[in-house]
Structure formats: C-alpha cells, structure tokens
Length: 185
Image (cartoon, rainbow, N blue to C red; front, side, top):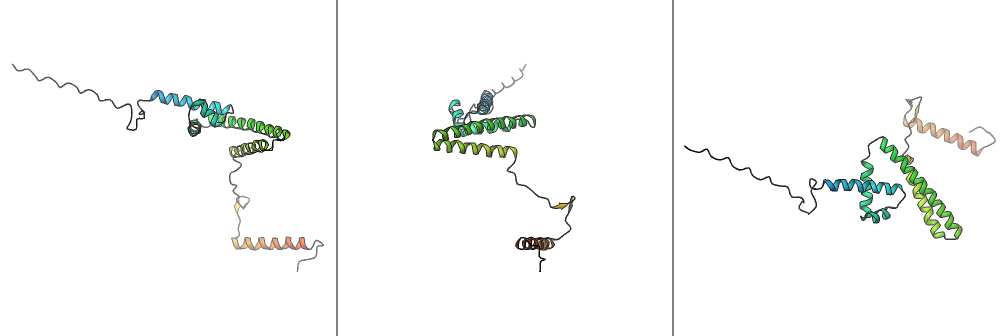
C-alpha cells in the first residue's frame, strides 16, 4: 500500500513592511496616524476660530507654520457642502469681524499713546482683514456687463456703435463748451 503524498504546507503569508523605502509609515500601517492627523486638523481649526495666529498654533502643536496652514486648508476642503461650508463661512466672517475690531482698537490706542509704528502696524492688519472679508463675500470678482436691450442683443455693428458714441460725445462736449445753448455748427 502506498500512502498518498502529503499536501504541501501553506506558505506563510508575507507581511508588508510597516515602512516604505524612505522610512515613513505605509498607509496600512498608520490608521492611528490618520485619526491623530484628523484630530490635529480639527484642533488647528478650533484654535484659529478662537483668533490665534498661525505661528502661535504651530508652536502650540509642535509643527511648522507651513504644516499648520496646510492642515487647516485640508480641513476646510474636507467639509461637506453646502451646510458645513456655509457654517464655516459664517464662522470666518465672525472671526474676521472680531479681529477687525481688535486691530482698529489697537490702532486707536497706539495713536493716542503716540506710538505711530504700532498704530500703522495695527492699521495694516485691519486693512488685510477687510481684504479677506471682501474676498469672502466675492466682492473682488470681475464684473461682466451684458449690453442688451430688453434681453435682446443690440442690432448695431461695432462701427455703428462707435459712430453713435462719437456723436454723443461731440454733442456733450459742445454743451459743456457753450452753456448758453447755442446750436452746434
């Protein structure tokens, strides 16, 4: 009697290394890092909402200024539209308005004390806040003008429009030059 051959022993599963060639943890090896990163991003957003500067937040978190800004931007992009974005816009508006008040008061106090350098610095900060508010509200978007009459395109060629504009300009110029109302020659 011959005995049947034994089945081959299964090969042990090869584990992927926990780090890549550069020594950084692989995505599979770092789920805890992902959660930690999400928590850090939400902390950064909360600290920023409280009015802290980027440098203060970076020092508090023990990371660089650039990483702080990148984490905040990633957090903003991760919000679900439209509710979260609208809420975030309202939060940003509130932050900007509070900072604007603070910098305006700082500028006034510094000017009253005669410290014109500090007053100028606070005033520049206030102006940058106003610029940020303008961008937030979309007031710096280019304006497009649609020249139509009752929603229909004008029935004149560009040459006819130029000629009409030149005639109107000549008439207005004559009226300014001759306020007595003499007819145009």
